[in-house]
Length: 247
Image (cartoon, rainbow, N blue to C red; front, side):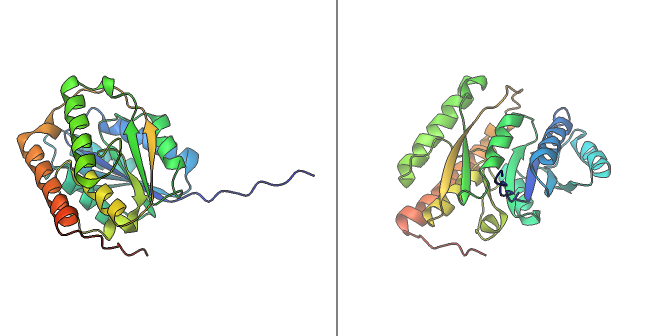
């Protein structure tokens, strides 16, 4: 008599899909996330945060909302930045776990599935890109330099700080996050690791996309420096290691 396999418990997940002028990529991103979710999840939400786009991203978001019952939409009245959009997305997330997905359709389907497959193993899943050469050289240099500086400042040995982190929604909602910039993921990662939560790094592949360059605008880089400075003051000067309350 064959032994029956124990059914695995599938987590519920909110996909926070940030979009700024992604009229050419947003629908494909949603369709891929929807297909993955139907394949591996029982309960999910596709939350689009339209960051004050000046193209037809907003109209496309509303069309997808009417078409798919799993889609919800939030519109920033003006362009607020990636960090702000992610913070807003996490505030609105209704599922047990949340994951950030860029609306530029950069992440491969198999990579998203790989990240989701590790849900529940540890408190925080931290993906890192294994094929960075598909990105422009200037972005590789900036990204690599940022990772090295963060590891040096906070005594860590991570491969990446700006990826599609997967975490229990409540843990992120309990954090006092302030970043409006691309440094938001680093802010989450450092806060949770320093508070003693467990983490696991997962390798992923990305596809080559058209670079808009808005991530590396002066405003965003200034915000990134501000975020890192606040983290350094909190953990290296004040030596804070306050535990985030698990619920």
